[in-house]
Length: 121
Length: 121
DNA sequence: ACAAAATACATAGCATTACTAGGTATTTTG
DNA sequence: CAAAATACCTAGTAATGCTATGTATTTTGT
Image 1 (cartoon, rainbow over the protein chains, first blue to last red):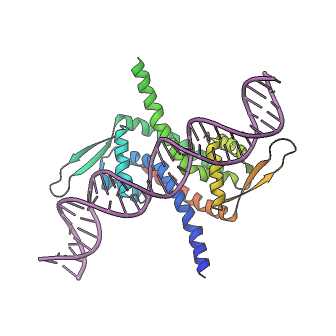
Image 2 (spheres, chains in turn yellow, green, cyan, orange; image 1 turned 180 degrees about the vertical axis):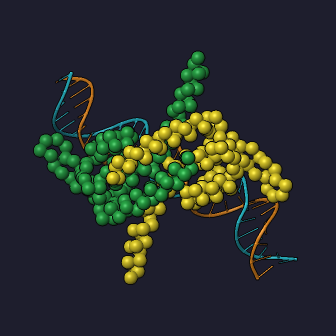
Image 3 (cartoon, each protein chain N blue to C red; image 1 turned 90 degrees about the vertical axis):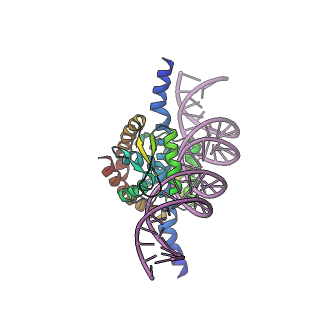
């Protein structure tokens, strides 16, 4: 009985979970840039947005280093905004380079999508 | 003039290239399993198939370790086939676990795809 | 009133995985 | 007969999401 449960666990979780993590690596930047298109968000809010839109749970330890990288690459810019109460928030927005790169990513994504559609069918 | 060329190079290649590499990490296993569905291929042939279907150039140093990993994870099986002439080929096929996992991946992919569509629009 | 949870930022080290660079061997092509 | 294509492989590197941890404030539950 224990073996069966272990089997089911392994079949349904382990491998697919790893794969999902890899998909995140490929699409997270893309998703974040798309969410930031036409709207500024702060870090914590971005995590919620990603969860809402894609059902992906992003750890804070994933997001903040990622946003720093995107800033270094000049794809996003950030600014601190003081709150009337509570901790100040760091808001992110797309740079012109970010907008341009996002357009290229969207084109690449559409291409990939149609390729995969042909393979799946 | 040199600065302008450098600028164009940086804008169009550097960042996007990295991103594409990340997308591969997320989708390559998925693509390979789909290609292997209902058809056996050997390694070198798989690289060509991927190139044809998705326009992705996969290095040999990427594929062979990947296929070994998929075999360790019991998603694919392999067998050596002697050729009348030339080097023997190692053919890969899906295992029952691989077929099951692929179905889950396809479902996950469709979900992700529709999520991203909503964000992009 | 006080503990717990949520909000909000951040970093260090780990695990995974595609890539670069190198190796071996055979067959075909110019 | 050299070069390219075919066909396999490995070692080490780079990139990046995750785990665990830390700090600080505000809100919520009892």
